[in-house]
Image 1 (cartoon, rainbow, N blue to C red):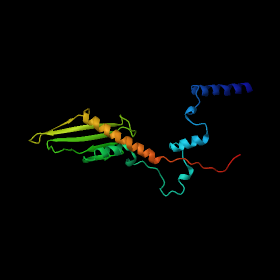
Image 2 (image 1 turned 90 degrees about the vertical axis):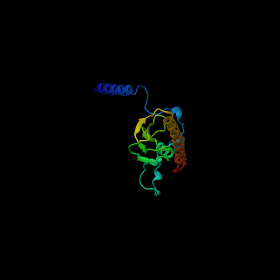
Image 3 (image 1 turned 135 degrees about the vertical axis):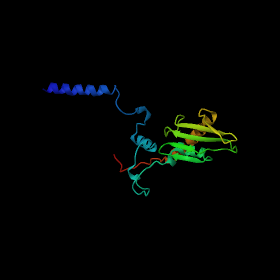
Length: 187
């Protein structure tokens, strides 16, 4: 009976270890310092840990909310197109739509639609559509879309550059060095 129980336990161990593909779960030990205090310091500084004493004595309130002002892509997009009147700016829907805009030419207008595909600052995180409206002297207008032109690429490039700056500033602002907390000396 003991042999059957040991054989069953041994079979389950082999099954579970086989499902790990020979790798134990966890991170690569070469990328992290061996000293636990240094690992804790690195994790907390990078925002991967928590601090028990952060909530005590703070009068900030009880939550951590992400608003549109904390999204670097959103802020950069609004700052780049701030000269254009907005028709709609829906943060939760991830869309900014401008109104028709003309720069001293009453017969040519421009309208932008910016869709946010992700919150990450990457080249594929934005979808910019540009609509052109050309009117003749009798106010008969034609609307066309040209989203693959140089203006779309320049807008995307400028938005991403500014978003990268905002993202870097946000990381520097949120960085808090870990000073440690000692309960007492151990021998």
